[in-house]
Amino acid sequence: MADTIFGYPFRRFFLGNPPIYRGYPGSTTALLDWIESPTSHILKINVPGLSKDEIKLQIEEGNILHLRGESGKEENHGKDVVWHVAERGSGKEGFSRMIELPENVKLDQIKAHVENGVLTVIVPKDSASKSHKVRNVNITSRL
Image 1 (cartoon, rainbow, N blue to C red):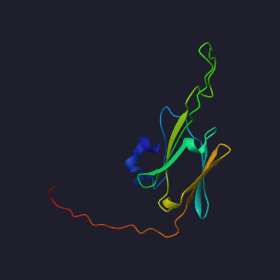
Image 2: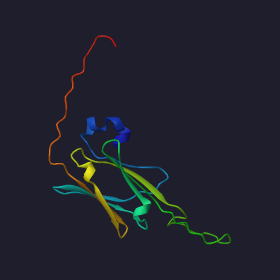
Image 3: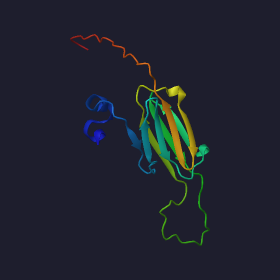
Image 4: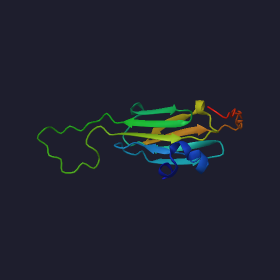
C-alpha cells in the first residue's frame, strides 16, 4: 500500500524505514516469517519440494535480499491424459521475492540452509553503529 501512496523511492522519507517485500506477477509467493533476535534477523521461507540447488539467494542494490526458486520437475502423464484440476501446479513452478534488509546487518556473514521445505536465512546484526556521513551541497542561483 505504501508503494501506491508514496512510491518506492520516497518510502523512507514518509514511513521511516519499513522493510519491503516485493513479489513478481506471474510467480507464486514464498511465504515468509521474519523474526528478530538481539543478535540477528531470522527469515524462514516456505520452499516446499525445492532442493538447495533450485534456490538462489543474492544480495542486490546494497541491502536487498533477492530470493529465487524454480522447480525443474515437470509432471508428464502422456498426451492422452485430460487434466480436470491443476491446483498444485502443472509444470515448472517458480517464485521471486525481494526483501529489504535493515542497514545494521552484516551482509558478508549471512548464512542459509534448507530443511524439510523451509529455507532458514540468518542475518547477523552489526553492533557497531554506522555513522551517516553528512555532505554539504552547494546551492547556487542558477543550474
